[in-house]
Length: 212
Image 1 (cartoon, rainbow, N blue to C red):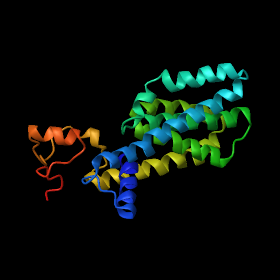
Image 2: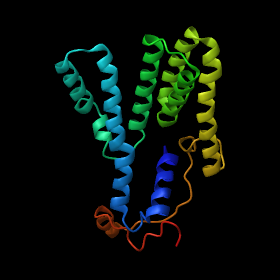
Image 3: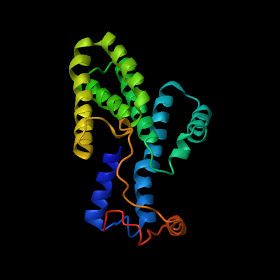
């Protein structure tokens, strides 16, 4: 998830001159809008697409949509950078693909590959989703062992390779950041009087984030 956000900021910085140190409030709001608000809209759209396959009454659909929009914690996650919404979208996308396989009898290579990618991405965003990946894997194995072990595993492998490669590139280790339990190097000390500036969206001059 950090790689996705960092790559977007790199594009904004290089192409449009957006600097988080100069305008932290607007830079972060832009990233939140791209990675959370738009994803929340995509989550609701996917959810309603699933509901429309099984529900015919418009009033029930409206009720289900309102429940998904306001009856879960996902709406609260839409206002800050976090990994929960991307994981929810990946899980729903997986369910959409599973419905296509089960109800529409579409079981092409791309479907199995996409399910592998989506379930693996959900694990990179939320480690507990590993159980979800396992259950989906068992279900697909029972349905089509050959395609699961080839194209499904291929999709998982692509995400896993990218995940561990990024970890090694960023930290010099295959272990993810949360597996490192020791304290790292102290980069900077923040004075209490600088707190008001940070709250107002201004980075204090005394805060040398990059040792400058």
